Length: 527
Image (cartoon, rainbow, N blue to C red; front, side, top):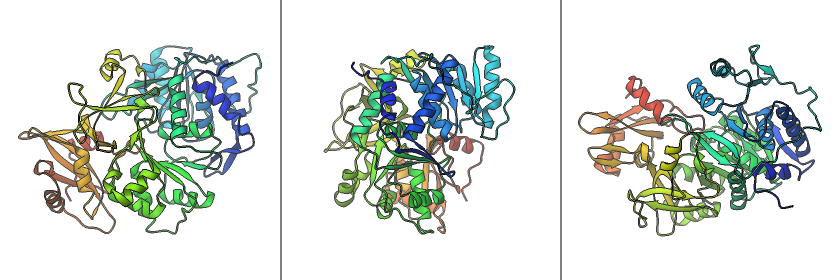
């Protein structure tokens, strides 16, 4: 019988292949589960969910921190052939309330104190007694009586209950965008699309049972995709509840970690602590990074600390992180021969087509800016309950990313900015990432974020918010003078604000929406 092209079938087969090899270690408890044990727990939870009526077409929402439960419940929902709606533990109650009311999950599994009242309110407002709210023990949470408490010791094996076989067009995951630019949007990925994404990633960047993967970012985002495809390949995955740079470096040394994923902000913090502590990263073979642009100078620093082991990936929720990649060999070549390429996000992935188009949809020439549009079997089929937005985003089979970029003469892709982050000042288009690139080159600057703020004369004026390196000193005048020497006049910031740290979204991107709010409320300081 031909194996179905579904993530469910891939998952079921993948977890059975590696038996007594270590699959998952939870830190700091140092609890390890073999593949056989992980599969047993996954099947146990699957039986439990099936008894709750979970199956094809069922929406199951989860709000679970990085933990065994976070891994196993995610796997079990997929094994049941249902649709998982993963919510990050750092999401605000406003976003959680919106997502629950739109996706209407039949089962909600949670382990976060801050969302207890919101989830209870959702059930009461929906006035649906069939909704099951499952509270997970062991997280120090006081659950109301309306919640059902999951019990690991309860016998859940029922041979008469079997998982439904998912079809290729079934929705496997309904992922909501961060909502930093507006209302969260539900992104629908089919079983076949998720299957294609996992296989594409495995082909592009092979990992096997010799790898030790360390994850500390939320598993509901990019780390979760890497987790799933690693478990299909026999990788030993280590999961930390949160990221802390010192303990992260200590973990690499203690467990001889070979592979990890991080966003640039995390990498910057690691580079900072390496100047203050003894460390050993000789076991490392791969560092995946992505989610936001990286400073070229800091990337060179990373080479000096970790070696030529960087792997960049460009993706988005709508395309399951399989748009383009800058490989280890490309990093190494660029570092020694053409550093400019380190600012690129590589070349199209094996299963992905990429074009740069103008406003009329015509392809632009190399080095000309255009919107990045993508075609891939791993891309979303649309936004949940938003047909008009889906038609606007997917046209003639091409996903319009909203990113502005260009090709160089060798086919490398450079992202210049998000359409929505572009600042129009005095009629000129200012790409915030380009301003940040210049500001980050100042020797005193650790990190910067460029935002556009309302201006009666210019329409929008260019502002930057910066953090300064420890022990360094810098003024607004210094930054502005430096920019005048290194960029176009219309890109020079009108104002510079200083903060000890920049607000971040749950996945580690600088939260520009929050910075704009702080500006309006007068909370940014020029000193």
